[in-house]
Length: 269
Image 1 (cartoon, one colour):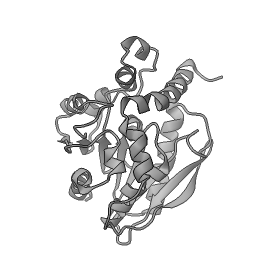
Image 2: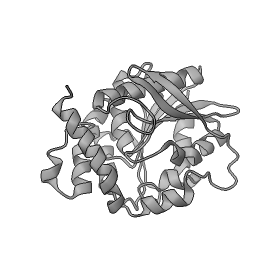
Image 3: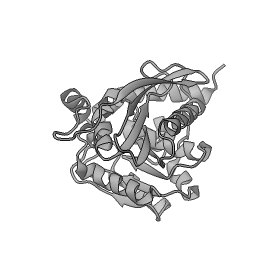
Image 4: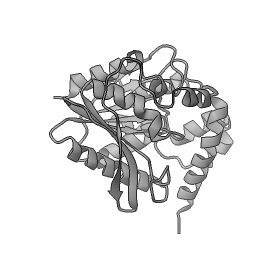
């Protein structure tokens, strides 16, 4: 029988997928407009679909190859995302010699399994192992976006060897804090499991950390990023101007991604 906390997590994620569109009204429009198209003039390789076996079945995933790779990155997407939304990012990374892998969590898309904190951790471990096998000898980085920042941070102690670095894009402090922000209700947020407390976890991590947060994010305000940076002052904080919550992957220009490319280059040895 499922634990109560898992049931509450599933309920919240289902609810948040609906609420999130009313908080940031640019999401639906931009997704339909761009739908994962790469920026003009970016000559990267096309991502390919694949499946990754897990203890609960398999994960749908999308691998972005690179012709002359020097690093690899595992992408943990947000609460309402699809693999296709990230094609532009993967093409951009490919053009800069970075192999990328993004995967759908259990119960997302065609991925099998039941969503829970433990299952999401196991999914991340399986995807990380697959990327290491697909890019042998390359330094592996971990990037989380929105909800994926909590998933990625929580997974770090369970990944071996440790990633070469962690990148948090449009992060929140904890799932409960994210719920309070989206619902505008601290009372309702108290019903949400207090998991993915990134603000509490970051001080214990010893790998390089980059925090990227667009200043036009209407879903998670900039103070989330500043609070996380205060929790881990050794981190690098970058604030790309004009980017909404989904702007970094729906409009993957170098304004947003160059600091990420620079971070990877700086820490890939």
